[in-house]
Length: 250
Image 1: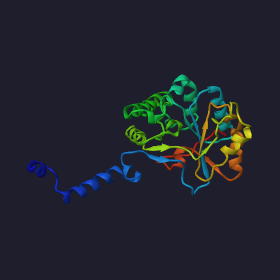
Image 2 (image 1 turned 90 degrees about the horizontal axis):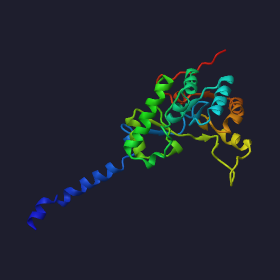
Image 3 (image 1 turned 90 degrees about the vertical axis):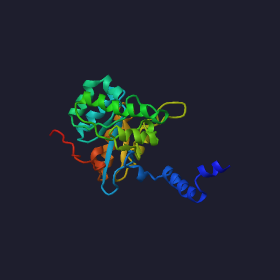
Image 4 (image 1 turned 135 degrees about the horizontal axis):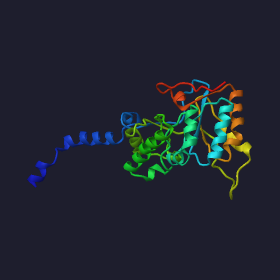
């Protein structure tokens, strides 16, 4: 009994330690920013700009149509194809990069990141960068978009360690994965309404391989411009160091 009392911390000194442990386990997100990626859904609401972003990359034909519309209308956008899709069509994606469109990170194979351990999450992010950069011959924007918008604290930690201090989601979407009950697409007007709900600073999610996006893209662009919006890239809307406007021929 004497030994038990001498090895235990006195009661009056245990409470401060317990409080310190609890506070450490519940640090606010801001306190974690030094080693965990921050999470963003949009840019500053102070400028009348929006950013088009196109994920994945299945269906190079439709992705090519998206690129053609962007070039014809001189509209900046940012692409986030998975590394597997870039590897499957390296000539096409190198061409997109050569046109001046920036690329950000969307993993290797589009997994649910929260189902993976830290090492696998880090591998998905870091190796995606290495593979994509080796093909497009340009540095990737240091922004990671977790597939399905699914992330946890481990994702934020792995992204930061891989050199991606920002996770970017979205506040507006083409809703191109939405289908009628039982299958089939909704009328294109439904997707157009969804894609044009953005406000100042909005990040708009699309998928360049979708059967929907290329069909309404010109109307989406025209709608925003008619309301006085300017299109910018992800580095611009987030105010990243060295961000510059895209230039288009003619």
